[in-house]
Image 1 (cartoon, helix red, strand yellow):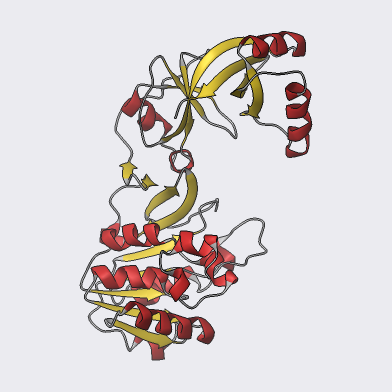
Image 2 (image 1 turned 180 degrees about the vertical axis):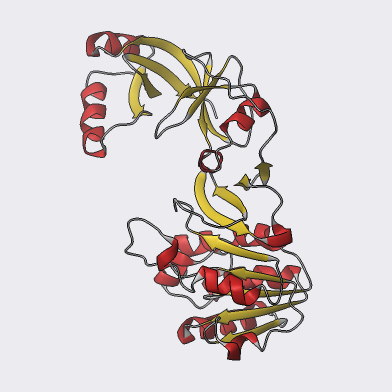
Length: 335
């Protein structure tokens, strides 16, 4: 029986060969399918194929896939998984992707994709610890094609390459960063959200509207837009204004805006002082019973602050509480 996490990564995980650690690093099926569509071609190379989830998506979009993996155990699982799925257009190559012995086996290559290995214990990702060495991979594989795509850790701070940075979110959470080189580069940076498959790119002259006070609705912004630095474009696209910066980016508008890059929407019920007595009085007026804190707070304090409010309340309504300086914004989630 496949775990829930495994089934979230691949619908047929129950039939496939994998370990819990394999699933941790495996590309979600929906992400793999999107990327395979963007990289559709005749012959593609998948460097660091792991147990094969991205490879199998490529095999459905491309005529032929070369799948390279240095870990013998993983590539054997990938072979077995391909057989289970009935995919016969994949050539599996066990070995170091940077070695001449591996590279000389690659023929008529249109696109190269690489999902490099990262150290799981790292607290901060850097290009120096990614394997295989990205600069060397680019040097060697550009002899085959300039169309190269590389998955990078989405939280990495420095990207010293001329490429498109595509930040991808899945179900409102930042999931992947893909770098596109050569003719695959369309823009400097982009944000894409799944499952809606909506994309936002830099727009000349886009102006970030800002608000000093909440309007009738608040919106959580998709983290892919934040990482891609496309807040101005989102503001121009939706007509909403930036209300709050920091860890939680919040937009506001006078009307409910349905946009894939707004993860959640909240209706503003009241804005009051954050002084506890005044806040509790307002929460009781709104029939509050459960409080969800939607502002930056030390995780160690979250439960205590929430309990201190909820123990004074007897209502049934779930309230989402935002904080703007010394003001509390009482809201309810509407989407």
